[in-house]
Amino acid sequence: MERREPPKTEEGLYVLHDLRTIDWAAWRETAERDREAAIEEGIDFFEDHAAVEKGDTAVFSVLGHKADLLILHLRETLSELDTVEREFEGCALAEFTDRASSYLSVTEASGYTEAAEDYFDPDAEADPGLQRYMDSRLHPELPDTEFVSFYPMSKRRDPEYNWYDLPFDERRELMAAHGDIGREYAGKVTQIISGSVGFDDHEWGVTLFADDMTEIKHLLYEMRFDPSSSKYAEFGRFYTGRRFSPDQLVGFLAGEDVSISEGKEVDSELVAEFGRLGVTVDAPEGAHGLVLRSEADLETVREEVDDLRGNFEHYDSHVLTEVREDNGETTIVSVWETERAADTARGFLEELSGITEVTAGALADEEVEPEGTGEGDEDDIRGELADLDIYAGKPHGEDVYAMVLYSEAALTELTPEVEELSDGFDRYDTHVKTATYWAKDGRQAAIVSIWETADAADTAGGFLADLPKTVGRAGEESSFGTMGMFYTVKPEHREDFAEKFDTVGGLLSEMDGHRETNLMVNVEDENDMFIDSRWRSKEDAMGFFSSDAFRDTVQWGRDILADRPRHVFLA
Image 1 (cartoon, one colour):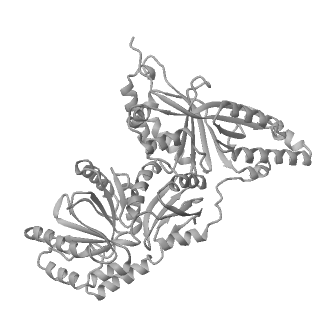
Image 2: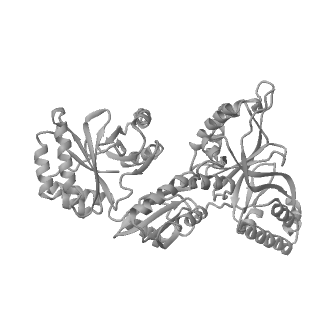
Image 3: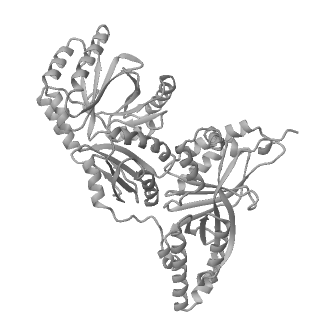
């Protein structure tokens, strides 16, 4: 019988799930001073080991009868894990606990995906982004989320469904589909996968983290219907817990509500800096931000950050990372869901070219609005354009918003996915239109999605961002939101319009504050055109709209356009 090919694996941190029950009767009967001493020792133990340089320790209150306490350790060596396990047994607190169960494993990255195969191939070209991603799997950080779910599992060896008899390519295909489900929960559920063949009774340990326990339930329920689970998986006991901080140990033992989810003090200076830079972000509870200044030129830093961003997107805790120009200085802005994740990202970002200054801190648990970009300010800009006799409404009426993202994917790859998204969007009453536009110079595509509300447009942006090779959202790189200009051209004047754009484009390139302007054509209707024009500031953009060149262009356009042009401030 043919021997099946096993995937290559690499191991990282050793993991111990130490599950304990509390002898509550003994605890209640113990003298107050002895309880205080046990609590003090316990807090010191948890705090000291949570602060280790490499690895981590966290403590959770376990729900149900199977245990009361989960102490989760990650360490570089089995020796360290052995030591910390026995050290706890020496604490006074341990005298009031009995071990209910435990599980030993090691974080693992396997070679089932094509990218992972490159990682394990010594002859493949080194990919720093892939290296950092694999390192995040092997040396994970415990997220600061409220809930944890842990369970061991194995692959089935039944005569009918034997995982280990399947050809490698079939196993890889099954694992890829299984992983696709998990990626749909990115940002909601974080996982640590650890191998335990030869370590414990099952083959893997799965530890899931989330702020909403039902998200874990939804993820696992969906995965149950995937063949890699429904046919080939067997599961052990499940343990559900709530994380609490070491200093809440006294409350835990007193029966009080304890949770790590309480927010941290907001860094008002950092929030103000985000606003001044024009960064809009819905900062989740506990989110932390970074602002870095660089002496290097904008394009150099932008290329370096693009390389990093591909790696950052593999982290569930990543919110955004952008590069902006601020008064001639290159500025990097990065937001993460946790302080620890932000600190890790800081280590990578500080290695960028020319970094001279770093500001870091906690962000508000509310949307951070850029200065001077609220609805009132938008109305003021529309008023200024109206004074110049320029229509500044939103496309298709005064009550819709446009979201634009850019992609470097080929149209044959991108267009079908956009059409599929658009069909899904049509289920919502607020959806007006979603279409793909192709740049006249052939460099990239723009995906335009129009909605009746700004919130709906922004929500759609999250789905659109998952399209192939997206490289940014309109307005991300400009301190003044991208101006979008929609035109419907009479078919017989389509070439005339393109030639006029080339003439106006030449004038724009010489104007102060102009960054870039592109002509985009709807791939399904070549008479539907979209111009996106990026400016350093509102004043620079208004300077163009009040110029004689723009007035002449508007007058000329009256004869070749099938509809009134719409100059749009994108959502």
